[in-house]
Length: 65
Image (tube, one colour):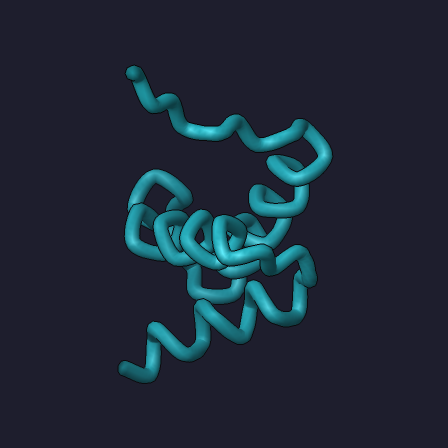
């Protein structure tokens, strides 16, 4: 049996991209260097988080630790 990753719907991809873009702009960081931040967003999305505020909170939390 093969396991495939679940795809993310386009609307949700747009949400994740918007949050990542805003974060990178705020931190003056190129998106190409935001690998750790993208991983945090995908992880939170996988846990069911769909709120921009909660996604940003997760980024702030990982930055603190």
